Image (cartoon, rainbow, N blue to C red; front, side, top):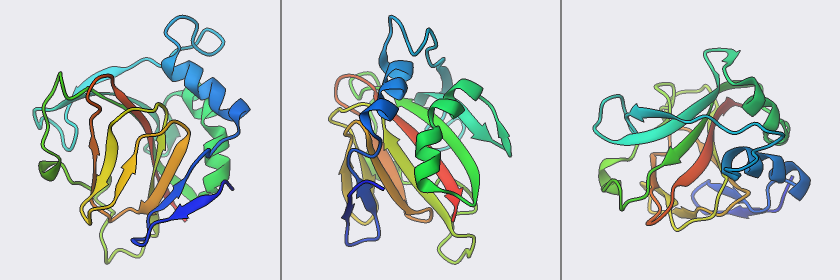
Length: 185
């Protein structure tokens, strides 16, 4: 497991989460517009809803795993090194998010705090964890309701109890690309 930076709030940040040879295929799949990874590139799907359906905000997504099944086999296989490191008992969801730059879509972070699942309550004993894997470096970040801030740095992973309210703050220029994990420990 990579070195962790322990935030006093129970948020664990891991820099250089994957080895370079594990990160590079992920980078190619998501960021290499010309070649992709072995000719494969992530297809993105535009949805109306960043926090909830039809909230008026747009983002691009691709689902790797949801509803107890693999949705995108290529993406799921590329993300296996992350899966192996977090070592879940069970996975709830794995989803790629591409947030539009704030020059395209203005947002107010204070209006966007959320949890990723209806199962994520402070009193819930399900032991679900939320994790964010940052694919690209940009000036966007993850902001927590308690004030903690995690910068978007490529190959960084942050894990926290799923009931922690958080929001993704868009980058000022290009898109902010992350993989969102929800799993049970």
